[in-house]
Length: 383
Image 1 (tube, rainbow, N blue to C red):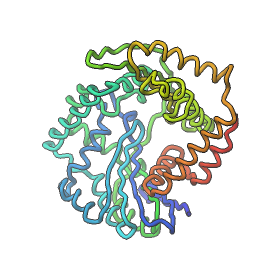
Image 2 (image 1 turned 120 degrees about the vertical axis):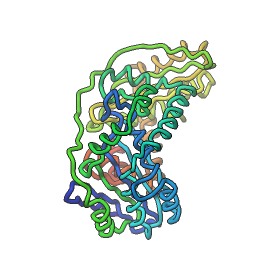
Image 3 (image 1 turned 30 degrees about the vertical axis):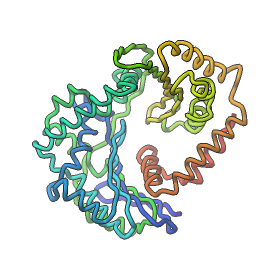
């Protein structure tokens, strides 16, 4: 396993975890732009733009793009988060150059007005879909309350109002500002020919004009709020609680991951045995997520309305006891380490998963962490 890094003259970075024993390969473009980089008026533009890249470019129609990936047996997709938009393809190593050519073309969308108006309806339906299915958008509403005016509180999909009022020219301007070489990392994992990867990157991305890109980081001031949303059609009650946790640059993030596993993973945690296993709740979980300035502990509960008050009391007791009367035990910590390490090792068998891991690490912290280093960091956490 070898990690290699290069940079084009226009600022685009190239990283690769090269594994000569792998049979496949995955390549991806990690764009440092997401919901947090939008204005209130353009809420949801990052995700909407991700949709639009698949609607055709200046040289290929949407159908031609799809067929071109299919012709080489490649799986291509994309996703948007609060902080990044990622485009990726998994394929056989001999099609590395072709996949890179297609991804480069994908990121130069035509953004035709007629496609924009058609896809706007698709995004609006997606927003309404999440509002109509459990937990009925409560997770996004809770984030908005927790972060207040901070950009991390913005909904990835945007709102019906922001998407309806968005213009294609506003999206074009956003694309010109954010999709610049200095804001993009090209990552690859698997049986990578790195010399050829750099040569292909220079051929397909080298002529892209550099731009400012960047991101303004602002302190987060968590808001303590409570809000009730009534959904007459719901048969269950859902509770989401957010609390501040270590951020992306905090070395305690490994301890936070283990703590969330011990208290609230979906099999064998304290919440599971107290609430899910005896049938008192359909779901009772605690999850950890990280962002640049802050991390989040997210508690999620789903049960009948009649059972919810007692379930909430149980959750409070479990958290309080973990900090006082019943601190984390060594056997619980070891079990959590085994679970997380097993998941990391098994997931690393797929090139696509290693692509996401090294790309996210690089774009978040500007460094490479091997699977061995990740496992060691987890194993070093103590009670």
